[in-house]
Amino acid sequence: MTKKDLLTPIGITVGFAMVMFGIMANAGFGGFRSFIQLSSILIVLGGLGAAILVNFNISEVKLTIRVAKEAFKTSDMNVKELMALFVRLSEKARREGLLALETELEEVEDPFIKKGILLAVDGIQPEVINDIMKAEIVAVEERHQRGRAIIEKAGEYAPAWGMIGTLIGLVLMLQSLTNPSTLGPQMAVALLTTFYGTLLANLVFIPMAGKLENKTYHEIYLKQIIIEGVMGVQDGQNPRILEEKLSAFLSEKEKRVEEEELPQDGTVGEAANEA
Image (cartoon, rainbow, N blue to C red; front, side, top):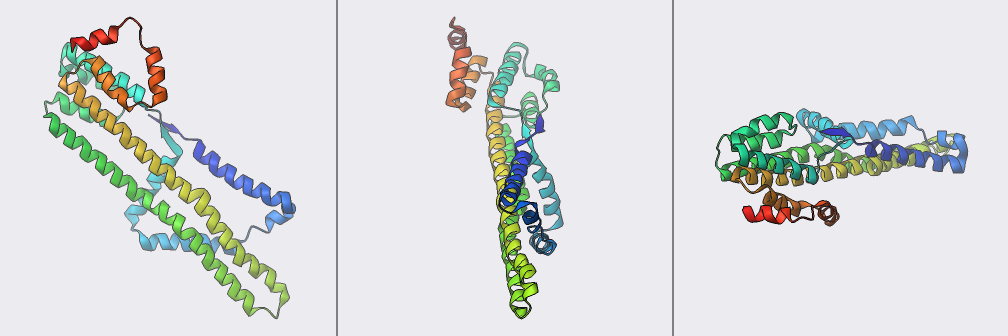
């Protein structure tokens, strides 16, 4: 299940707000208005958009829009929840057989888990299931990388278009040295385009690409845990043994919490000996 990731919009908003307040603290509201230059905005955004269209095809652009939305979402799935789920599935499979797991899947929302369990229920060989699920991980990673590529390129192009705007402003300024009244606006275009391009790159595009990359790593990490869980359920492993196996994916802090929550009557050890 996914929910809104508020850190992304909060971070972008706070970044722009701090820049705005920093300007106003030194120059007041009138000084802030001098940082709003339509021609500079058109050069940076127009040039950036044109470069993206040249570099990528329409299907990649559409994919990026969908991938970019993921920066504003987060998954509430975690390792402990996966452990609990596969322990429950393992207990049911040992007690009632693999076919009984189909009813359990009605409550599972993750399609990757459903796919793995259904392959196990259908009696597919473990190595085949492993190959199928790992192939899907590779496909997911490739798909995410292609969607993230435009955002990464935008982070590269934005400062460059800022510099192009600076060159335009400087050329116009040099052509009008005999008219002092035009020097100010032309210098503003020269400097503000670099400001806009650098700000967009370092506050929006590069951080967003970094967050998407981290989300990809985390999703692949969880899918690897799911593969281990599916293999354990199909193999008929003792639920406690499977739990111990999956606990290897927990952080040290999570392991300490897990140990504190374990019963002190030795039931885990007894269950392990039954395997």
